Length: 174
Length: 256
Image (cartoon, each protein chain N blue to C red):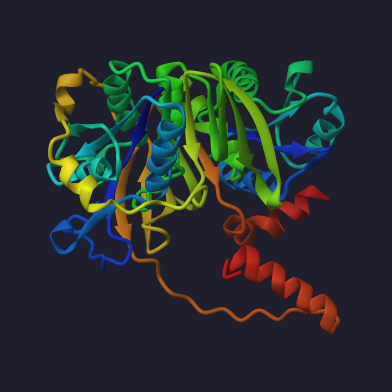
């Protein structure tokens, strides 16, 4: 399963949840023998793209434009749609941030795909990925599966993946 | 201004939850229902905008027959009319299919503004507002804390992480998802309750909207999370440890 992780940066630094999404991406792509790619989006961010290239992944996409300097839903959705059309991932992972909440559903809808948000983990059931998220305000957990041609977006909630993967990611990040 | 407020009926917050047979939903027979609290903030904001700028507030809700009760509650608070998109199996709909159905009904109304709550207390997908904007081809903004309307444009205050806010400008028509706590929600008055009896609730069967898309995701199983115990030692000087503890209580345990 080829995984694309959309990262978020502010002032030249990745936010921690982006690193968790990357850790999740490393795990999923390794388990499913797929490729892992990361996207950096903004203006003047080639430095961070270089940072991204140092961790264990196969490809880094850089989406740069004057109009991407400040976040706008339309700008980000348009730019990311183009990256996705070229990268053709099977699975897209996004970090859990207010900004991602703002554009990710729109991006998913434009691709005609479902988005499973606030994932706190996943299980690999013989190649079928089942994503776990909370429901009823955390009183229950729910297993969700998206089978729309395999291309789905998942948004990972912070902290939860850190516990499972952070150490693994940190080793590779060095 | 014609404002359309999306309100969802959800199991009451303190309702005891039992998982239904098959495990894909809860047992509804045991549960009382109420208006989704985040949507009640959106409805209140809609009513305040109407009071300030004139116009009409229309509420829309999807689900089985019982959601008419939540629509009536909205009418009693001051909404002018309601639309019930009838569907017995609403709980099983994935976010995109649900939004497609709502969008089909909303498009006929051509509203100036569509308001939704941040997310629902049951599914908690948090996508409906943004999906509606995509499907209706309208601009949107999320986590709105303040709305100012002048002419055909809006100035909006959005909440960001870590206590930051952002002001954005947007044209009308648009879709906004409202942050909880933006206002103080009103109670329905007796006069409002009486007036609600005369207000119209139009019922549309979801199938009749002609939305026949395939589901894009499915909840396979709902279960109560397993409890585990873990002890973690926080290192450092007393001051450092206190700082780390506050971080954990705030961001991990989320009790602060």
